[in-house]
Image (cartoon, rainbow, N blue to C red; front, side):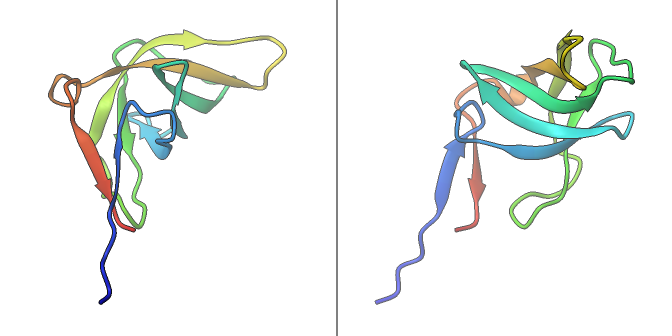
Length: 103
């Protein structure tokens, strides 16, 4: 018997990682750090405003342009060539919603 397995992760799980793009087409990575959803690897020479949409990039498991949330606060450091931004998860996703990924 060949059983198919599906991996299910809440979008607030520290194991959940996803390539994203902002509505201004800049790309980064969605991750969860210390229970906070953040976008990492944002170029430090760009500016980001609160409420900028965070959208999915296409992967084998994910379609393009699903809205994950909005930029809440930008975190930068002069020692780091990249910036991070805290993400405010969209209201429909803020409950116990999951993204089901292919095995």
